[in-house]
Picture (cartoon, protein in one colour):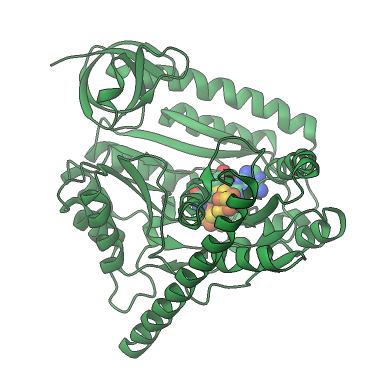
Length: 478
Ligand code: SAH
Ligand code: SF4
Ligand code: F3S
C-alpha cells in the first residue's frame, strides 16, 4: 500500500467507527425503553466456539453489547444470545445446530429474545441457506469480516421485523477502536494479523477468514501500550500464521522485530504468540525468543503429520526432516522450551506407514502436549474431493494409539520441572477446590497452589511440589 492509500484507509476507518458509535447510542435508547417496559435490565450472552481469534472477537462483541446497555450473563436464557461460531471441523459446526435447537425454547417464553449467529460458519453459503430455511427464529446473521458492525445490525433487528443477514466476502476495512470487554483483567489477546493464505488442503480457515492481512505495527504497539496502562501483564499475539507477519505492509516489519518491540513496553511481563507455521519460522525469531526474557518459553508448532508424503499432499511445505531439524535448532537455542503441537489423523490416503511416521515424530520430539484431531472433511477444500478417504474405524483406531503415546510422552516432558521454583501468573480460583489458585508457568503448564483471590493477576514464585500428568501442585514461596 502506498502512503495515500494508508491515509485513505485510516480516514475510512475513522468514519466507520464514528458511524458505529452513533448506532451504539441509538441501540442504547431502544434498550433503555425496553428496560422501563420490563422493569428490569436486559441481559446478553455471547458464546464462543473455536479458536483464540474467535475468543478475541467475542470480547469485542461483548464490549459493544455492554456499551449498548446489556448486562452480560452466563445463562442462555437471556434477552440476546449471540453464537460466535467455528467450522474448522464438522463437530464444531454440528454443535451449533444442537445448541440453537435449545435456544428456541427460551424464545417461546420470551418472544422479544434476539438470537444472533456470527463467525466462521456463517461465511459458508450453505449454512446461511439452511438457517434461512429451517431456523426462522434466528434474528441476525453476520460473518467474520464485519463483526465491528454489530451495533448497526442490531439496530436493524430491533427496528425491523425480519431476519437480518449481512455477510461480506472479504474485509474491505477493519475497525479496531471500539469498546472491548476483556475476559481477564491481567491478560489479553491482540490480533496482529487476520486471515490465512496458506491453503492447507484440509483446512477451511482461508475460505472463511479471507486473505492474510497484517495490522500496522504502530497500531498494534499502541493497543498493547493501552492494555499495559490498563493493568494487562500478559499479551498473546494472535494470527493463523504469525511467522509470516508483515507481508503487504508499506514498510515491511518481521514478526521477530515486532515481538522485540512488544517486549520494550513497560508493564507487559509476558509475551506469547499463536500460531507458528513451521515453514516460516525464522532464525531471527529463534534469536529474539532466546534473548528476550519476556517472551514465554513455549512454542506451539503444528506438525499435522509426520509423513513427508502426506505433508506434501496437505500443502504444508515442509518435510518430516525439516520439522525435526527445526525442533533441534529451537532446542539448541532454548533447551527448556515447551513444544506443543496439532496433529491430524486419518487424512485422505494415510497408510499405516504414514501413521508410523507421525508416531515417530511424537516419540522423537516429546511434546509437552498435543491437540490430536480426527480428519474432518470440509466442503470446498481440495482434500474433501480426494477419493482415498480413510474409513472411520481405521482412523479412530490410529487416533487412540496416537493419543496414548502423546499422553505418555507429555507426562514425562511435563515432569521435568518438578522441584523447581518458578514464576506463576495466578489466573483464577480453582474451579474444584476454592482454597487453591490456578495459574500458568511461562511455558504454559498449569499449576494449582494454595492462595486467595487477592493474588489473582499477580506473578507469584511457586515451588513445584508434584507433577500430576499435565499440571503441577505447588506452594507459593516468598
Ligand atoms: N493456523 C493454524 C491452525 C488453525 S486450525 C496452523 O496452521 O497451525 C487448528 C488446527 O485444527 C490445525 O492445526 C489442524 O490440526 C486442525 N484442523 C484444521 N482443519 C482440520 C480438518 N479439516 N480436520 C481435522 N483437523 C483440522
Ligand atoms: Fe489452516 Fe493451514 Fe492456514 Fe493454519 S496455516 S489456518 S491449517 S490453512
Ligand atoms: Fe474455527 Fe474460525 Fe478459528 S473456523 S478455528 S473459529 S478461525
